[in-house]
Amino acid sequence: MRKNLGFRSWFYFRTGWSMYFAFILSAVNTLTVTYYLAIERAQVLKDIFPSFLIYVAFFVLIGVPILITVGLIHFKKSSAHKAQVDISIESNPYVIRNLVNSELIINLNVRLAKIILELTISLVVICRY
Image (tube, rainbow, N blue to C red; front, top):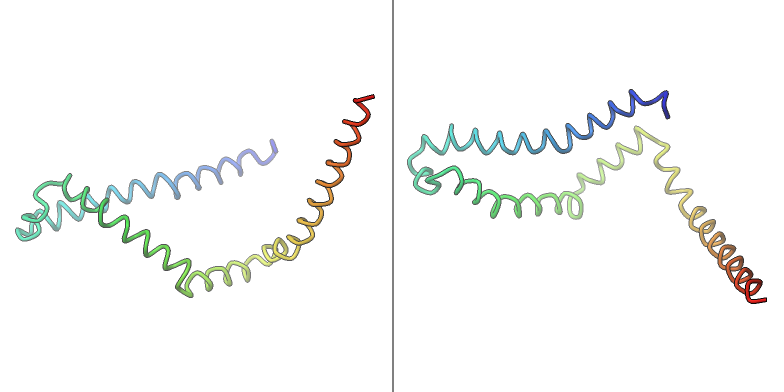
C-alpha cells in the first residue's frame, strides 16, 4: 500500500474534488450567475425573485425535487442508463466477472456461515463439560 500512496492520494483528491467540491461550487456559481446576470436585469423576473435568497429558496424547493425526478427517470425509465452500463462493461470487461462470480461467492458465504455455526455449537457443548 505504501508504494501506491501517491496514486491513491491522487485518486482520493480527484474523487473529493469532482464529486463534492466542484459539485457544490458549480451549484453556487450557477445560482449566482443566473441571478445576477439574468434575473436582476429582467424586471419581470426581478418581480418574481426580489432577492437572491428567495431565488435560492425557490431553487431548493422546486428545482431539487425536479432534479431528483430527472435522476430517477434516468435510472429507472430511460434507456440512457442501460447504454451507460453497456459501455462501462465494454470498456472494462472485468466488471462482468463480478456478476458471474456472485452466485459462487454467495454459496461460499452460506457454507462458511454453516461451518462457523457448527463450530460455535461445538464450542458451546465443549464449554458446558
